[in-house]
Each structure stands twice: as C-alpha cells, then as structure tokens.
Length: 369
Image (tube, rainbow, N blue to C red; front, side, top):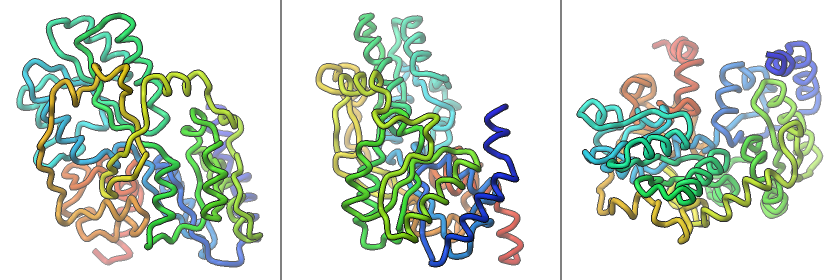
C-alpha cells in the first residue's frame, strides 16, 4: 500500500495541478497512449481538474481493444474444436467477434479456461497430452516476453501439443500512424511506462524529432500522470519536443535486456491489423521461423473467415482519439458491458468501459437523459 498512498497524495496532487495551471497559456491536446492511464485519468477525475485549455485524448493502448476482429474470429473457430483446450486471460472472453464470443463458445461446450499466465497453459498441455492446448497471446510489448518464454520452454521441453495464437502489437509504430493521420489533433504523448520498462526508450527520440511532439514516459498513479502532464505542458509552452522519462523508478533507457533478447529469438516483426484502425506496417510480432510449429494459425489453418464489424459501433474512432466514448450514439444504450458492440466497452482498459463505469451518471445528468 505504500506506493499507492504516496502516489495518490492529495496535497502533492494540488501542487502539481497548480504548476500545470500556472504554466498553461494555450490550448493543448495530449494523448495518453495506454488504456490503464485512461482509466486512472477518468477514475480520479484528472481531466476535470486540468486547465480548460488542456484536452486529454484517449489513445489506442488497450491490447484487448485493438486485437483485430479477424483474430477474434480465428480464436472462436479454434476454441470451438472438440480436440482443443483454449486458454486465455479473462478479459478476452466477452470481446465480441463477428457473431459470437468466447463465453458463448464455452456455454456451447467448448473447453475454454481462464489462466493467469501462459505458463499455466503450458502446464495444462503437459497434463493433457491427448488434447491440443492453445493460448491466446495478445498485447503490447509488456505481455510479449512471457509469451515468448512459454514458446521457448515448449520447444525446449518437447511439448508438441501446445501452440500460441499471436496478436502482439507495438506502440511506436502506432504513435507514428496517429501522427501521420490527416485527422490527427495530438500535440504530445504520455508514453506507457510498463511498455518502456521492457523495451526501453530508444525508439521514441526519433519520433519526437520527426513529428515534433513531446513524449513523456509516465506511470499510472495520479501523481505519475500529473507529473507527466506537467512536463508535457512545459515542453509545449517552450516549443520543445523531447523524450522525458518521468517513471524512472521502473524504466531504464535500455529496458529489460534479458526480455528483449528472448523477444528477438522467438518473434519477428510483421505488419499487423489493429481493430478499428486498420493495418499498420511493421507494428506487430509473429513467431519466427524457428518457432513456427507453435503458431496456432498455421497449425489449425484458420483462413477464409468473413468478418463483420457492428455498423453502429464507433470504437475505431475512439481508439484514434477522434471522439470521446459518450459521443457514440450507442454508448450506454445498445452498447454496455453486458452487451458490448466493441472491445472498448468490455475491456478493463477500454475507454468506453472507463466512461461507462466512472462517468455514466454525470453524462446522463448533462444530457438530461
């Protein structure tokens, strides 16, 4: 509890807010990349305490939300097979595919198990040698090392009935894609501290220089976010565009060298589709040829799937920071956590889920609903 208390101190928060108010003279649009940061901002009302000139824009940094519909449908096709034990983190079970989700597959008899680590799935594979065990490996650079280690261990131990359905995406190419969009309004970024704790910060200075935007590596507690915003505003007001690390207790410039070495061995870069955004070149990982035998897409040959996004869901615009969740006409009506139209409503890091959980009553009062 020590660090939660220290980084939620209201007196220190007020001092940081005073400094932000004093420094702000112009309107600025700042994107927090990570969905965890979005939830912290909305939960603590940070965006409502900032100067009116500062707009927080919610970015695409929710791994569940950006997993493409095609991959979800492939997961559903694999999970429905009678010879498969399909393992996943719990937050993927309600993510809607074209016609179903993993909960419905499970209710129809599919053997779907919630695990807390990909190594749990490997243990299940060892315990069930007559079944195929698939782990749904999604996420940003943060979760990738554990998935890479599990595939490495499967090969080392000779476990043949384990495979990984991979949908890993990378933050820096997404930042570049956002900045190159003709509708981009973002003037600075709060980078995700946990991603940088793995990968380090070397990929960000070239982005600052190329797009002339400040990038501040930031944590997830209220004081972390306020300090990140304070540093960002000072850069914007002074016409600077540099990388700053405001999360030094967890992030080193070089990152986690052992984790990066494992990633380089097991994965290779590839173009990757982002749900609601489209394909971003060189923005993901897939298993390298050395480990291709553990690729569930190749093992089960799930191809030629027809995917259909909801025609009224605007989660893609939310993920690009073009609209706020409540500006979608389906928000809180056709689309709720119980009946989600898009992953941004059901994910624990989704922006729509944050607004539904922490802002729904406020928004009703404002709109008169």
